[in-house]
Image (tube, rainbow, N blue to C red):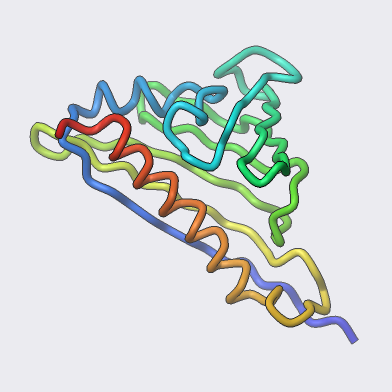
Amino acid sequence: MSQNKKQLVVVQKIELSIPVEKTWEILKDFNGMSAWHPVVVSSKLIEGSNNQEGAVRLMSLQDGSSVTEKLLAYSDQSRSIAYGMVDGQLPVSDYVSVLTAHAAGQGSIVIWQGAFKRKDDNPAAGADDDAAKKIINAVYAIGLNGLKQRHDIQ
């Protein structure tokens, strides 16, 4: 008998010394995650135009795998970008992620949140809800730390 998959949520944030306008310039490039996320080796658009809803990117990762994601929403006004995973090796399904940049004094705060379900109805050991959350948390933490290391004022 299959277990019901529940909606899981992960939220990470990081403070940067750089102004929110500069932070947004980095984050708003849907096809530019390789400029700040250490695990993303390259990214190429395979459908649509960059930063246009419906655009699809194919990202190559350090471990040789790839992830395909579709841009769902983009707003310069709210400094947010939302995308969903179309294909990839992550143990999640129904994955939607939102990256948002907010002003914080002279600096900025980046919030990265995701909502998803575990991939399998009857998960094997290490593929349950907690494992799915742990992996997405790691993806976000590595990415946000990479953003800080590569682009923050030292």
